[in-house]
Amino acid sequence: MIGQEEMKAQVRDLWRLCFSADSEEFVDLYFRMRYTEQINSAVVEDGKVIAALQRIPYPMTFAGDVVPTAYISGACTHPDFRGKGVMRSLLAEAHRQMYREGVVLSTLIPAEESLRLYYDRSGYALCFQQDEKLLTGKCLFVDKYSSFLRFSEIDSDKFLSDEVWNFFYEQQRKRPCALLHTREDMQAVLADWIMSGGHVWAAFSAETPVGVAFCLGTGEDLQVRELLASDPQTENQLEVFLLRHYGADRLLRRFPSGGNGEFRGMARVIHVQSLLALWSRLHPQPLNIRVTGDDTFPENNGDFRVEEGSCCRIQAVTPNVDRVYDIRQLPAFLFAGQYPFMNLMMD
Image: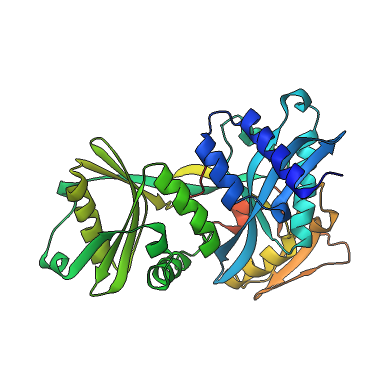
């Protein structure tokens, strides 16, 4: 058993070893603003941390509600212990802890393509997509409305003030299926964004926030990783302003996908019955669903009856079910047509 400070120090040392490309400034920020004892999961052998990950809480919009999820961050194993099932066991334990905490879904972003198959073995499936659109000045229009808007670059303190934060949070909540940044989480996101050379702008009508944008200038191209606005007209004028302000030829914008975007994140169902109940709010027709293949949670396997916003386990053997899904197939079924989205994840 090792103490809290020793645990944090060892997890940090393991991070440096496994993620050597990360700057010391980023590592300092992460362990100052994101890491906590409560969200850390680790494997300790002979007093040494040999694997670790953090379970960062994220609310998520789904079926007209906000549900608790957790995002796996910093998953790493000491090189001497790789290929021995250490991380897979740690993921299973992290999932069990999520279940105890009432989390219904786990998410992550694979650091590289080869890891997709690895996480698939722990029940994850590709789920979150994004589109990127390239805009030029020719794509955008300008009208007199822009004269009524004031554009201001803002720091983290201004962003987190009640007026701007409340606007940002309510706008992101309008997305039907997306991870939501909490105020606490945004403190770390903003610090990382600004440290990486990014800028945050806000559009005001009188003194009321009507738009925010996270942008990063790279030569002729301006990357806009997030843009939320009160209406399409404000959205357009904010894009025009950013192009002109930075003298960029092109604006590359990240959007929630309409279904044909690039897969970016993976999801693993933690609590089947809760998510099926939410799904049935969107699809009230009665349905018998069989779930299989969950080695971590036997209670997730079995037959379920979903109907009008409720889900109950069918105790008797059901000879005929309407659908059969492996635990890895469930995210595609649950979120079909919802276009799950994650953004600004410090990845």
